[in-house]
Image (cartoon, rainbow, N blue to C red):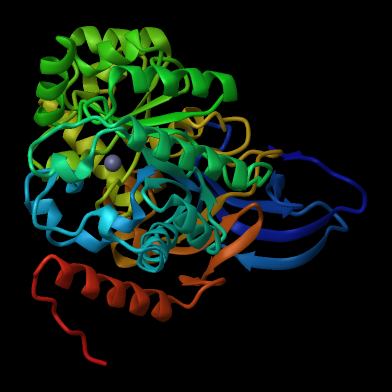
Length: 458
Ligand SMILES: [Zn+2]
């Protein structure tokens, strides 16, 4: 099989030879072995058994023993919250609701920049070529993450609740906070308009942290500007109870009534969704962002078998947890099987691999540009080293990837044909410097909430 966009004589910027390909047009569970994939002008220009005759090539990568996959699409992260790792996961609440840990609002722009680079670098080194990140300070964090070269779907955290009071158990809505956060979100969109690697979204934090009137305003804006809306949906009992007390409805019903339940909606978590909610999400063509590791770490499971059966598109994300999308596929598979009580045809490696690639691409409206290795799509791809003890033998590359693979197996990450990680090392930033600056920022933040901070060796 040979597919190509050829000119004569063909000139390529980057060529992989001898590669095993996963995630091609042949289907998520088909591995194509000993293949050549060539990139020109940031796009995949050729896939075939050997280079076309007379081809000129700027850089050849010998991908023998390596597996090439489409870049992983990690649609819901909060890179800044790398500051609470090792602690927040065991508190039992989402970080924004957890007392005694540093909050986004306490982070200054310089610290935000350092933490965002750490979070984004971690995700990119482990194979995410697109990061959908939202939080406060999205102005500086987007700049900081864009420096790495990774594709971004950033957003400002929009809410009209006063988060300072939420931590103390009071949900007070303030129109001034709403207009300030919404304006910041729109400024961010204006700032990045026309940048091909950055697609700004609206991130209404959650139904309990946005009043009904404010949700309507966001829905109107999203429609007017054709922007994606990224939310936390059915994330916690606190959210469900607050929304019920305020409206007598579920969060999904409120979204339906305020005009947010559309194909532009990406609902994160969806742990507390009823059968009626799932039906509404399916009918609207909305997308579910599945965050299995965060959910399971807090002792909960999203009803993904029902969500998938309803025909809803599922994307995957690491949220505040370790940003390894390869490991995350395994969590998505296993947590669904635990609910099904066994292994079935609904939940196989091909399904979670699809969610980690095309599921995210579809949710973002980028299915024609990224998500598979196909000629004409942008060259967003990841090369993994499979000549390692936990990945041998290569009987079923996809099974090995999903069950045994790790982000640490990633050797090369390419976005738009640009090599951003080469032999496991970032090409645009200094890894040690990123870690050092983040450590420095965290020390001040943790001391700010009165916690002892381990002092690393100089
Ligand atoms: Zn989140």
